[in-house]
Length: 174
Figure 1 (cartoon, rainbow, N blue to C red):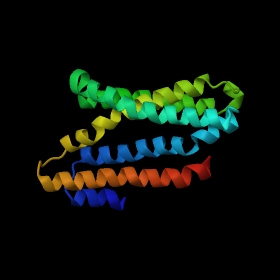
Figure 2: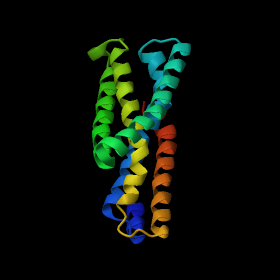
Figure 3: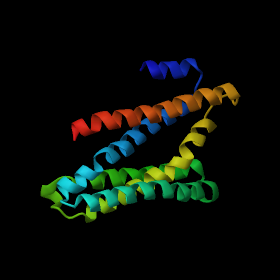
Figure 4: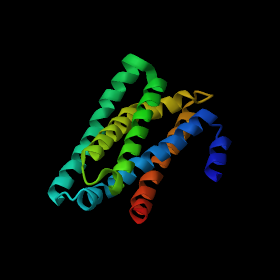
């Protein structure tokens, strides 16, 4: 809560603050999945370490590549807001599908649901990556260089904090 108050002291709009908080939770999810994905593949889906590692890298590749798709949608089709909204729904669907596939009594050891969930996660994560930071900057009430520096400092701090938490906490909670 102190960080949110601090952002208010720096005169960030509620929408910009919401963008920073949203980015924190998006990155917490993304890096949390990355932190335990190989373990999920080897322990739950009984894949070889080699295949699990390959699929892990495919997930990262797709997440990075879908940034281009998201940028195209944002710039030429739907705009930043609609792109973020639509691909966040895709991201949520991927999270739900992946979570459900982790319950063996519901899905068994078939990897199909996990692959679909990971595809949606990578599309959602990569797709919104190119739009979130500029969308948040668009929400600033004043358009001064100082305000942009403050906003982007909080934005990237939240991303790195989420990555740190995901690397430490998610493996413990698994």
